[in-house]
Length: 287
Image 1 (cartoon, helix red, strand yellow):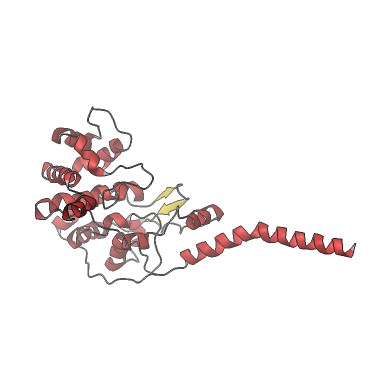
Image 2: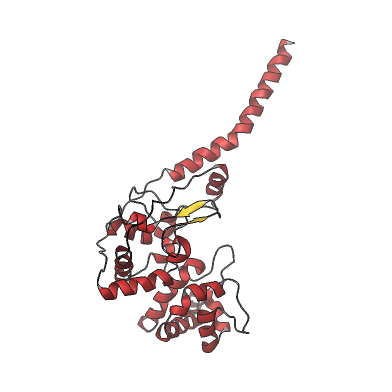
């Protein structure tokens, strides 16, 4: 009888341990990610508060998609996927953030306390030019601080599971490891820069498409004539005149403000990129 009780107790202990093992592992593993702190790089960026700088910054805020995530008035916006989370109220942060803090948040995905942001697409902005960041900050500084800071993210069991599985990742290490798009020389530098800055949020800064396949490699542009590409960027329509589910809203909200002298080099670069030999082809030719 005593032996049976011992075995029953052992089974109960093993069952309890097995039941709690996964939650404990998920909490510990995700907490290690959440508690990580990163090196804060120095930034010498200062807001460009000139009239031209503020006007250019207002345009960049739209083109970069800031209003799409932070709201039309940049007062913050709540998202439900991949976890419930608020995009920051940028106008509230004007009271406490320095220009250096904003720059690190935009291009490095870092908070002032050296922790990482979540969902902020810094990997698309890491190669933004200093002058553009300065203009963007000039526009922000011209706004009146308003509202309260957005709530900090809360990581429940479901969110922590996504961290452990890699479905949800901190932005700082992603930004640090982001590679630029293929460099085809000075002739295409303008189009390359626009592509990384404007298209990189969805298509990755290397323009090879998203991991989940929702955004394709931008060599797909070879399917478009020059006139059709203008229709894509201005109206969000495909090569057969069809309305595109994702590009349609993006064209209306962001890309329609691109000028001819911006769309032309963007198209030229994407076509040249698509026709450029791959590394495997170059290696084969060398052999």
